[in-house]
Length: 120
Image (cartoon, rainbow, N blue to C red; front, side, top):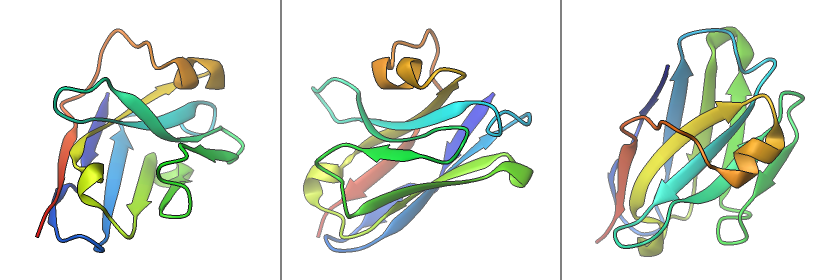
């Protein structure tokens, strides 16, 4: 079970940190991804982290978003800086043993996500 939190309303240029908490110790062996879905758009992968800590980002968020994890706390974070109105979306996390599955993003179930709204 994964639970996302940390979303909210923020002005353009602001920052937020999202959290994804797992019910078990999975991030030490699993890859993990943060996704987002804006109204009327398909869900997209914005950041991923492997079990070894290697990271990858969508071009649209490179240099602004940073993914990290705390294996001891079973939590993965997404630090979002310099937020733009186009970052407005519901943000989700998901996990799999294979990074290829994270990239594909074809999961049978998703959590409720956390809403991020960037607006003045």
